[in-house]
Length: 207
Picture 1 (cartoon, rainbow, N blue to C red):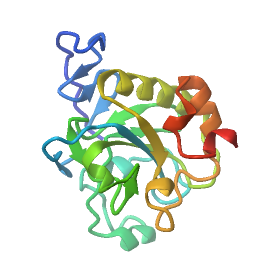
Picture 2 (picture 1 turned 90 degrees about the horizontal axis):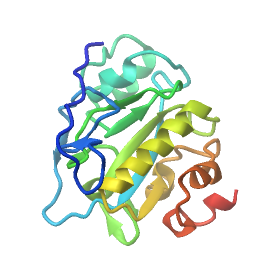
Picture 3 (picture 1 turned 45 degrees about the vertical axis):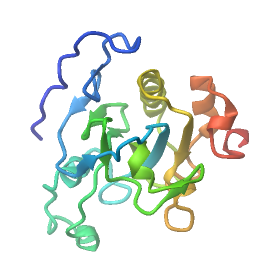
Picture 4 (picture 1 turned 180 degrees about the vertical axis):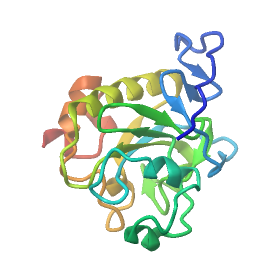
């Protein structure tokens, strides 16, 4: 799949060591999605939302996720795709099983990853969150390289944006979504990041 290189970073901003340019992360493969919009005026990007995705479900290593996020998925290529035909979604980031990192939307913009959602007393989590998709199947374990990439990414995001909360799709849309699911090791992520437990959903870091 064709990609563009991530933008060459400009001068360091807010102590970020040149990791960011206009919301694009230096160490991600950039593939721009048309599925995004501006954040509402005054929105404070203080939430990271974690998801899991695989297309078809449980199959890894292909380009279907990248195709979905760029509206290039061939709907007739697999029977499952008929159930999501016409879907237009995106995430800011996507972490493959081997830890490879992709970015589709500038973190300064609003990606379409959360849907109907609510967290920390605010609804419409797309407005003020950064979405990170992990290649995987809800309820199943994730790979060590994914946790390593995810921890580095979350730390870099928190250097540049006022992150105060991190949650799963299952937490911001309970009953509607179940990802990343029981296979995700929240305690490991918290240990890697060293963040205050209050930034995480209640009880997940005690699993």
